[in-house]
Amino acid sequence: MYNSEMPTRAELPSTKQLVRSTLIALVSAIVILVAVILPAEYAIDPTGAGKALGLTKMGEIKNQLAQEAAEDNAAEQTVVIVETTEPVTAIESTPEPAAVVQAIAEPAQPVTSAVVEATAPEWKDTILLSLKPGQGAEVKLVMEKGQTATFSWKSKGGPVNYDTHGDGNGRSISYEKGRGVPDDKGELIAAFTGNHGWFFRNRNDETVMVILRTNGEYAEMKRVL
Image (cartoon, rainbow, N blue to C red; front, side, top):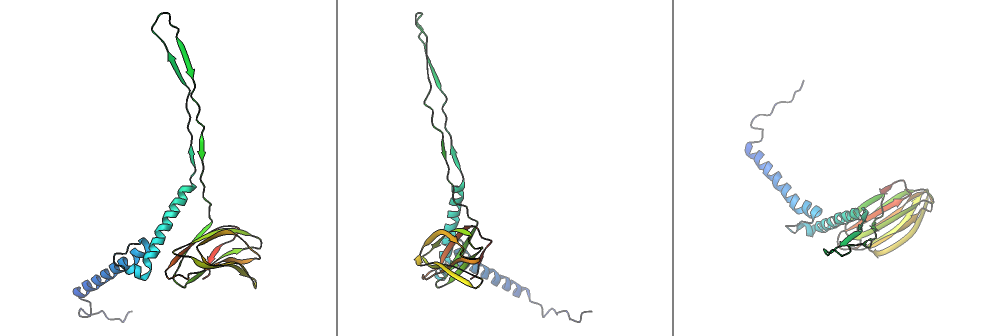
C-alpha cells in the first residue's frame, strides 16, 4: 500500500547528533527565558538585554498593575468595626459591724459602633495596551444612540496623545483630543448608533502601557487597531 522505503541506519541521526540537537534546543530555551521572558513578565533582567529591548520596562509596568489590582480588590471589601462595653458594677464593703454595705453601680460610657465602608468603582471591561515608541492603538465600544459609558484610563511609562471619537453608518464625530496626557476619566455619550471610543498614540522614547477601564451601556468592547 505504501511505496516509501525505510531509511537505512546510515541515514538515521546518530546518538551524538541527537544529543547535540537537544543541547542546542536547551541552550536556546534558556537564552529566551533569561533575555525575553523574565524581563517582559517579571522585570528580572540579569543580562541587560531586556532593558536594551524595552522588555524590562514592560515587566515593571505589569508588576505595578498586578499590585494595583490587588489593592483595588482589597478596597472593594467592606470593613465593619463594632465595639461595645458592658456596664460595670463595683461593690465596696467594710468589715466593721456598723458599716453600711454600699453598692455603687456606674455603667461605663457606651462606645459608639463604628462602621467603615470602602468601595471601589466596578468596571465591566479592562484592557491593557502596550505601545512601543510611535505605536498607536484604538479601542471602540459598540453603542446605541444616547447610551452612556463611564471610563477611566491612565498611561504608565509616560503620557500619550489621544482622540476620543465615534463612527458608524457613514457618520463620524470627534468628542475630545489631547496631547501628552497621563490619564483621563468621565462619561462617553453616543451621539449616534455605532462605534465610539479612543485612539492612543505613544510619542515617548520608551514603551508605555495604557490601562483602559469602562462600564455602562454598550454591547461590547473591541480593539480595532
